[in-house]
Length: 240
Ligand SMILES: [Zn+2]
Image 1: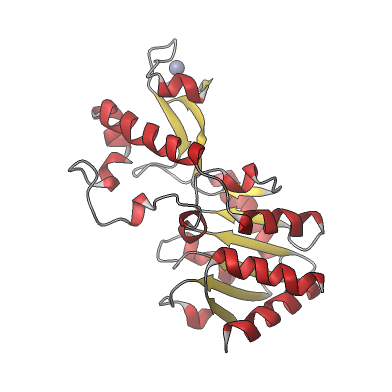
Image 2: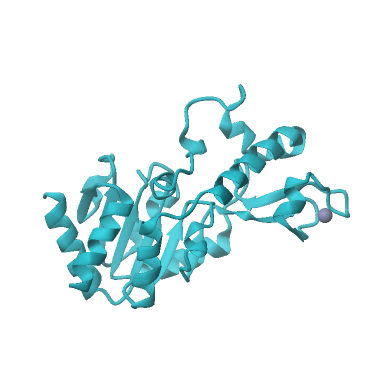
């Protein structure tokens, strides 16, 4: 199906759905210029990004961990959520979208005013002590300050070697189970368990991704296009 026709179909389904959940991945963020470190094959300063974003790095090579996440925070703070995020928050205000589950840790959905956002991998913009869990400011993290207990400060994201935040996953699953429509944007869904989420709806599933993925056949509709352009177009079709 041509993209145009598929977008029209998606707009129809959004109109007809009484509970729609979005599931967003790295492709949504990269269109705002946020690099996708986790899927990069290259090295960062001769280190594997998978190591730098692990509990082992936090505990054994804190200077490296700290530098990496200070740069990532700086990246997030100097960039802006693209118009696709604004479309989502507007559609939410109009009652056309009900919840957003995201694999991204940049906090852009919340920054764009969206509600019912489930950050499945946590958020870079919340800092706490790895030892005593006390919350701290982003500035304290950037300054390299230690907690009063002597513990290391870290962003509230899921590091390699850590469990996924169960209560947030449960909220996302509950939302998806009651949905009539799940729209997956900007992820090839290669990672377990997030790739299990779309199938939990009793309703329709739609994929918007720049390239075809290995799981396209599991969706009722696939649209190969940019997240931003697709969302702007769907909004145009909805307001007509
Ligand atoms: Zn502490």
